[in-house]
Structure formats: structure tokens, C-alpha cells
Length: 114
Length: 116
Image (cartoon, rainbow over all chains, first blue to last red; front, side):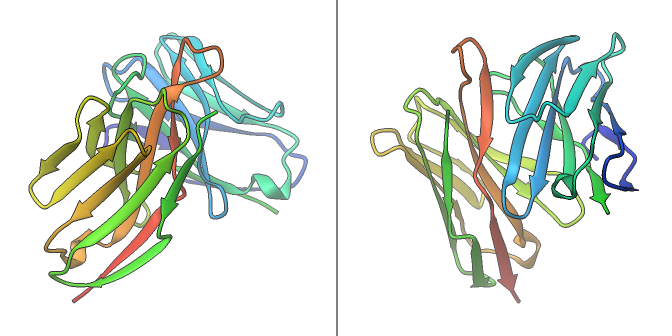
């Protein structure tokens, strides 16, 4: 058990809908990262938050947004969903800002857009 | 931005044999190279990492080598066991756009199967 909790584990929705994925980092970790995993693209970095502030941005679509709350949990919001958004979404956390740090991954949320 | 290529995409070995997975990266500013193991239904887990000021690092049956000049690094697993079967990801940490922050870029993964 990595100590990172992601909910829900599975999510099935329809095109055009909006969903929210939730992540609770390990106790004491200040950074939260979101990754998208698909068979053809592998693990794609979406965004990182450190202590409530956005720190780094990757290939995150404008239809997607995230935030980190004062209690350090994070939410990833996906809107106007398309079939291609179906993927496994991982949250990870680390102690500091992420420079040469070990990331602890949750078990992921499997999103299916029908 | 950083680009990480990983080979092979699948690897099948007999129990007891060695397995080698190779990665190349594009950004010479990258200075941290971790390897993650992902078992079925789980998130990736760090198994070993190496920093750019080191050429080789070993942890029991696992070793990683880094050639900064050629911009490639490799994972070596000796005396493989069935429980080593998983997907392995290499990654490189380099500066994101603007240069003030670092982000981890992953290879596409290698499915390792160890046959008993």
C-alpha cells in the first residue's frame, strides 16, 4: 500500500459529461501529481501541485482542470468528455517539490467514456 | 521537452536468466533517472533510481547503468523470478518549459514475463 488513496476506482460515463477524480496524498506529502495512462501513450504527466499551488504543467487539455485544497487532497476535473479520454488516471505524491524525488502512486481510477 | 524511448516493449525470459531494458532520453539537462515497476491492477512503484553524477547503482538483483554522453540508461535484473513479471517504466527528470521546475517523463513501458 503506497499510502495514496484514489477514488473512485472505476468510473463509467457518457460523452459530453463531466467527472471528478479525487486523490488523498500520503500523510506529510506536499506535492500531488496527476498522470494519464493509456496503451498507446504510456504514462503522460498532466499536472503537479505543491502545497496548494500549481507547480508544473504537462500535456493537460483545456477541458481538464485540477486543484489542491488546503488539506492537500487534490481533485482532477474532466469535462466535455470524449471517447479518447478513456484511460487510467493516476495520482502520485511526494514529500517536496519533486526534484529527484520518489513518487508514490495510487492504484488509479479507470475511466470509461461510452 | 524531454522525450524518453524505451526498448523492448515486451520481453520474455526463463526463470534464472537476466533481463535488460534500455532507455534513451533527449534532454541533456535531465539529471535523475528512476525505474518504476507496475504490477497488474496497481500503480507504479519505484524500484531503483540513479542520478547523473553516478554511472552505476546496484540493489541486490537489480542494477541500473547510466551513460550521460550517449544519453542512455539501462535496467538489469539478474536471476529473474516469476514475481519479477510486471511492466517496467524508465523515466527522466528534466526541466519543464521555463526551466524553473522539473517534471518526470516516462518511457512507454516494457512488459517483462518470467517463465517458470
